[in-house]
Image 1 (cartoon, one colour):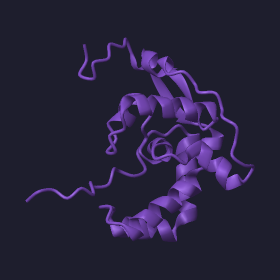
Image 2: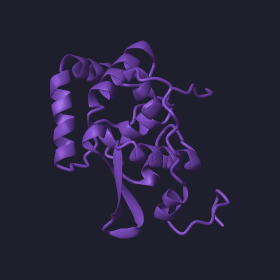
Image 3: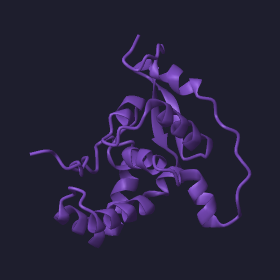
Image 4: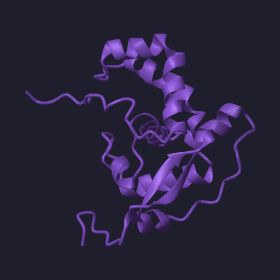
Amino acid sequence: MSENCLQIASEAEYALAVPAKPRQKRRSGCPVNLSLEIFGDRWSLLIVRDLMVRGYKTFKEFQNSGEKIATNILSERLVSLEADGILTRTPDPADGRKLIYRLTEKGIALAPIVLELLVWGARHNHTGAPIPVIDHMATNRDWVLKEVYRRWAEHDPTPFLPPFASTKKENA
């Protein structure tokens, strides 16, 4: 039995074991509300970020991200993002037990939102993000977005951004 006390044959089996939840009735037709119903939880945009700028594409890579998302939450979010057309999943050609996740056109269209959140977050919080990198991104938004779109279109897995330092204070 694994450390998580779950005996699952593969990542693919685990991801498929989480049933898609039926869409609940929308609270309103407001575009902001509708958008937040898709990606307004605390995890969905982090998954999108990891796909978009870190080059992550597998369940394990998302799970090992700095935010330490629980496996059940990760599976639910991946299923939900797929149901909403933000990402797709396909079997890994090299290992059919694994799934490869990829942003759709609808998902990559979130790039300007992710960029603005990144710049805003780094400017208003201690994130460990190098200030020159953030300043470059803020003053060259068009170039950054073109590069993100290019990498997506070319299936380029090269990380655009590394994980930033932890914001947790360590005991001296």
